[in-house]
Amino acid sequence: MKTALKIFKKLLLLTAVLVTIGVLYVNLYPTFGDSPNAESMDKIQQSTHFDGEHFQNLIPTNATSIGMAQGKRKIDRLGLTMNFIFPPKGKNPDKPLITKKLNSLNNGEFVWLGHSTVLFKTNNTTIITDPIFHNASPIPFLVEPFEMTNTPKVADLPFIDVVLISHDHYDHLDYQGIKQMNAKVGHFYVPLGVKAHLLRWGVANEKVTEYDWYEGVNFNHVQFVFAPSRHFSGRGIFNHRQTLWGSWAIIAPKLKAYFSGDGGYSPEFVKIGQRFGGFDIAFMEDGAYNESWKDVHMLPEQTAQASIDIQTKVVLPIHWGKFDLATHKWNEPVQRIAKALQKYNDKVLEQDKIKLVTPRIGEIFDLNKLPQFEWWEE
Image (cartoon, rainbow, N blue to C red; front, top):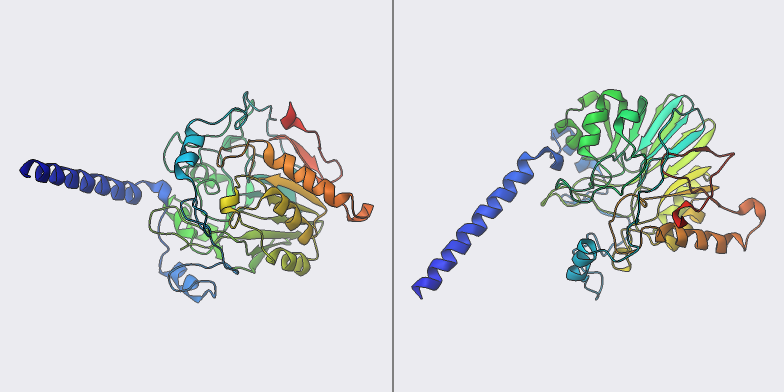
């Protein structure tokens, strides 16, 4: 009995030590970001999407994290873990992806840098979405990017007038990347609550502006509007859904673009399309999905439907091709959305068809010359 009690006390002490180390790690390691200050909290409290403790989606959303259940189906955590530790053949690329070295952009040009990072220029304004250049985890050396022949680097970036952030998850808000690119950024537009992270990382207060859904700003005759998505947020253990998430509409004199951020399918896509009168191009989430968490990450067929809903002419699939974040094969997202859009295009008039643009990472394109080569089949 005494031996069992001693073992129990030692285990209790070990648990306490590990918990203490974990809490200290979360609070002291800057990648976790920070909590909103009084000014930000005042804005958060005024939001109709904040219930006093958490931000809420516009419609009921079952799975707000991989670790939760959706309906009656429990996610196989062990199977999921084994899938990441021992990925089956074909899940990840078997050789370095052939990518292009980043060159300077002209007005009307776009370049996908992998995952949800798109760099583009319109009306002499250079814009980048969710810039991520390092691993997508708070733990170093976990969730590293796939090998590439020309890996995009912060050093290759031009001066960025506007950085658009959709939410604060690690595969969208890159601590090291933000610190490295801060000196070459004019302004950061972020969701409510996210400003605190950037302030902790050394970004000046006057360079960051927070927005609620359907709030926006006009910069250099380009309008930026933060719009809803169906997702969640959080970088730490205890700050789940305490910062907002969303998408962005970019309206310029010669371009209307939409950046979906992350999220499950929602009727709001129809409203967004109606509100802005459609788009010339949409950067649409298409990857890191699973039937068990489709409430917060669209399946490719849903991405195709969302693209129809927002009335876009061109779709650039994003959120794929850079990280292993789900159980599907690395190139499955683009294969499935291509089939779904082809099925739609076969039924409609020529002027209503949606074009799928599939550049290599780093390949510059414009709306008059869309790369559509199936490079992922090489």
